[in-house]
Length: 159
Image 1 (cartoon, one colour):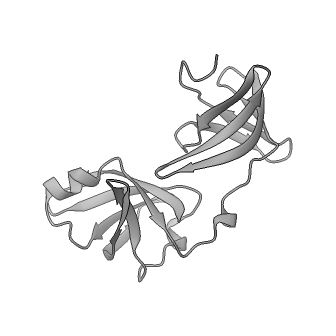
Image 2 (image 1 turned 120 degrees about the horizontal axis):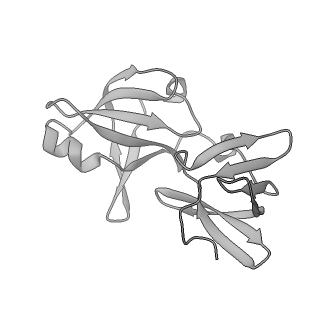
């Protein structure tokens, strides 16, 4: 399954949700297919009842089975996945240089770890290999021409 976005927050009292997309746009979503949210390590399918794009990377949605604020709040902060898009549509950063928020070179991307709800990259550094989260909120920039990925790296992840 392809990590496709995150539920940002509930919206209103009827179970609507504001969602953000990762690596895809609202136009890539097939409204006839389910999105999956993991609960207790298992993917749970939800179908769209309504879908209203909000700009280029967000949408206001209503999902089946989510009818009140309490249900919507339970989904807030959770990632969602689709199984009908190819994984290849996600950018491959293998071999790219990783820089931190101050512009210092951390190392090179050597691989991926697809933890459900938390895509991570392995970065080969001078002190070994570190695992860093690859989340859209942590990506400060990427330069395809030079193959450079700049991340806001939380304290303590790199020694």
